[in-house]
Length: 458
Image (cartoon, rainbow, N blue to C red; front, top):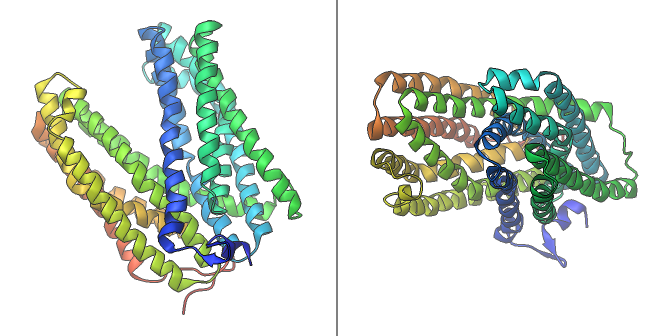
């Protein structure tokens, strides 16, 4: 039995499609939930040092999270490449694709860390930090930079394991890493008195611990299949090409999010505060939807790599139905909590009213968000990255003029947040749904076979 076939079987019997999806999606959801806990642990530990250290850490964290967020393509581009080779029955080539992704992550992480060391303090100063806040921000960023190559390596290693149909190992490693991070930070910050720098150093050390763990897992597999530990220039170039398209796609999403924040700022502090809360809820609800998208990347990549077009189509239809169902469920949860949830975040009645309005719009748009997330994952799994990048730019081109128009309305309070979230949840997400939905209507995205040797469906 080939590795690709084995992934969908259990003790010689085919595993049902729902079980295959859940076997990947549930552990992926757990790992996604663990990821923001790293930031939460840092914030909680640093918060006890005082206002200036916390403000400085907030700026340093903003820079790090922006860079790391843009590099998430290292996981999303590695997963389908590995899965397609796995589906084609070429386990060694699958591992080689993962290895090349890891090397790309290390090279990018090292370059970004050196750039951060050279220009980071000036960047923080231009962001408005000065005096003690600037010192704390720079201390946090400086001691976070050594961990940047490890963070990106972890992305690529997780993408490799997902492509190999394994989402349980990343969950375990992330859980142990979070625990180690919290303990290290407590000791370095409050026992050894290293302050903000200690929190950053603890996180860097935890990330390197996770990275080394993944390397210790992957290296024996590479040797067992006769795969060199050194990168293949052609494989590295392929990873760069795919990664470049994925970076462009991610950059367009980040640009839309930042533009929305800027529009909220123009509409006044009440709108900005309400938007911040609503977006946190949106991001939280996205975990469940993103877990399905990760399963889609791995499963669709495997099926197309094996040339099983009909199975890929069947998986796509089922996962679309599931994503719409999850969207309805999460939408109901948000709608039911909309009247009272704002009380957890603010005593200001106008801000609370704005949060309620935003949450109701968010609730109504959750099925649409589910549709977008799953199609994103399906097309990533198919390796249709150039289309995703172009679609992202088209969507941004549609959204930005609408956002400018909303800002020009100059509404404040609940009216302002209503128009802002209608723009984000309906226009932006709707444009994404349209561009991705049109693509999925045809079979042009369904390239069959291993990467670089795809066979168009007949």
